[in-house]
Length: 476
Image (cartoon, rainbow, N blue to C red; front, top):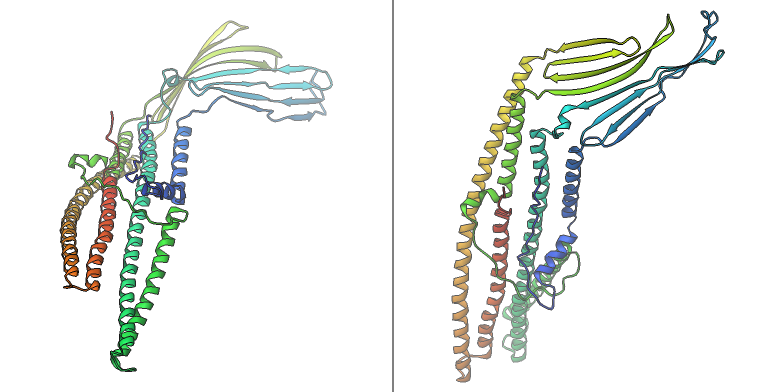
């Protein structure tokens, strides 16, 4: 079975700057993520398990002493010893993973302690599965399909989690940058409130202890508490970002890459990870159903045996050489043999049959269960395809919204720049105050935060688009 490596993670985030850029941050996040490490180990173990399942037993040697018995006879027959020691050592050798040739030997031995008489009756046999001589595989089609599904699922789990880590990182950056903007706004409002209060106190605009003077003090106090709260929120956001990356981040990236926002084609549904796995699951159940319907393939074995026997009456040994053919087919099994006794030059033929009768009702239930599992798999595949198309439609709507936001932002930036330019000219004429001019600068500066937030939203959308059809096209 040939398994394609699905994991080819192309990082969409790569910008060269002196500080840590998004690509570097994602690399650190992937290295730091324990869940990804677990999934990678699961993938490796899955592939090792499949490799082990596809291997027949390798060269293996087994030795046994058998039962060792010491017996004493108080009234032995003529010429028989009083003390008799018997043992039955045996050995079995399996040759290789390809042919699975099995060689076995037994060496029944009797030792007369009194007489020193030694009797050895060696038995040697060879058994060979015929299908291994023609290169038949160990696994059935259903087992191969199941192994492929297990391997691909483990790979897809890794790939999907990589996209999860990427999106978590981008969303946390978006949150952290939003906190920075909020603090900047609060700090500006706090500075203005302090300045207004100080100016009122200096000019004695309001009477000491009056409601208006008190209102200014309350405004300053409220903004100070708000600033402290926002800084705590920012600190938590930065700690969460450092947890994802696995090390202190320092300054957030100031340069952000362009995002690819092209939706996958409708025909790319087969490249969706969930659709792909659902299609493999259907193939597994279809293979199992065919296996349930079709009769099992017959198995044949050839063998030979060489053995020595002892006639206790005549105390003569005879050597038997035989060849055998065994077969198994569903409920039927047979064995045939042909051989001869070398000492008497006699030939013999042997044959044997066996049948077993299974419960056909249980077989019918098993077949119906397999058919239902195929239907369930096809319904799951249809649902996965439907989810792909629905998600694609939602992403198309999200891209339209991002495009609208980008156009609106450009219009706002153009208008803010124009208002600042006009404000600067009006300031030279004394028509606007420095505070009003500073407000115009701030409006333009806020758009920088909005621009970065929009870029991150585009990167998040690009990651989700990439995850929608993350697999390479199938190659035959």
